[in-house]
Length: 226
Length: 245
Ligand SMILES: Nc1ncnc2c1ncn2[C@@H]1O[C@H](COP(=O)(O)OP(=O)(O)O)[C@@H](O)[C@H]1O
Ligand SMILES: [Mg+2]
Image 1 (cartoon, each protein chain N blue to C red):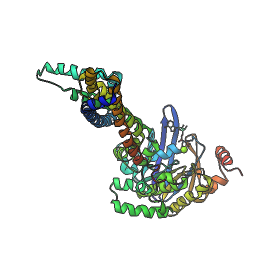
Image 2: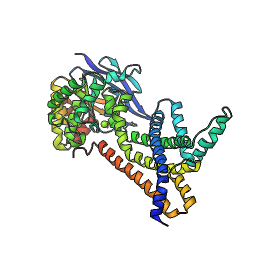
Image 3: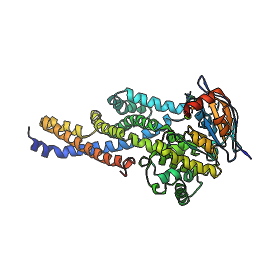
Image 4: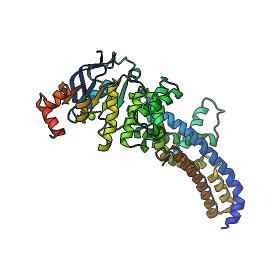
């Protein structure tokens, strides 16, 4: 066990992996939030068919392990599509991103739904009594308050998404865990390498938490001027 | 005088329970009608049927010539003309007082932002709160919140104002300031329907008092008649409970 040696030897490799981890996390959080937002709106639609789509999507994602979802996206679907288009290929990164985004999207959809239903009904009645339509009320009254309510759970989900990227090393995503495995295979520096990996995760997630604290403050109109 | 609100045979059912069992009511332009009665008698439900926050199960409701009970009416347009003030204020908690007041007029393109801002200030002067224009709702006392809520409703320049127990959530020392604003509104000729437990206000300001019990209007008349000489037993019992002599 030699921390300095591991540090100097492994760092270039781990940083390559870290780049991928951060990139796929940021993209998955972005896409996951978009998917979650639309899934939530669809889920609140007046049309039953639309509501069902959202419900089935959430049911499937929540009811299956992400590793199985990743296998289906990376190994399963390509095989299916190759029956029609033999040249079809999907990279581990793309498959990982699709899996991670769909996964985060389902949970974020539920978080948004919870936020919206936690908004005081009186706020909505007041808006409607002024003549504001359902949609204007949603955009100008319900959503701003729902998002504020949802922020802590959203941050929690973002943290889970960042950590879930590590699962994708099993389909060959070249993330930090994958790189660490490669280095450990050659150097047998298990302890120091994985401690280093843990520290990198801690750093990313601490940065996220700091950013989210600032965002939360911005949204906290209840304390803005006290 | 013209009828501003006309209700004929209003029925409202929640599931299996009949909450309103045939209400007939006419409110003339500029009239102030106070609705009293025990809790659970359907006062709020009747009021909320007037702007269709609740949909009637039967009967006809006509407000300012618009048949509110008709599914085809543009309900949003109709509601612009009917202000409502709630027991729990329901100020938009994420918006300043100014934005609470200007949201609807600006969104509904009744006014430009600058004009709406100017009107908001004028309305706040009217309710005595111009210094609170940049405050958030949580920074206001209950009485102040309710006065802002009245200003917010007035910003749409409605012809009719509905009040559902506007002072019931207030500390006693704040009731007066809200009633004062309402009294001024009545003097200015606003058509008002006020559900209230403030018998002093009803006696002084109402043109007519309505006593509701068990989903019907049991008795109505001039305030002096209802308060001094109620015809119905249940009215008498109710008044004895809320105004022990
Ligand atoms: N949304 C609702 N669903 C079911 N029952 C309701 C609903 N709103 C009111 N009620 C019932 O209708 C009756 C009348 O209520 P309400 O109009 O609020 O009376 P009041 O305002 O006179 O106290 C009560 O028994 C109440 O429980
Ligand atoms: Mg009530």
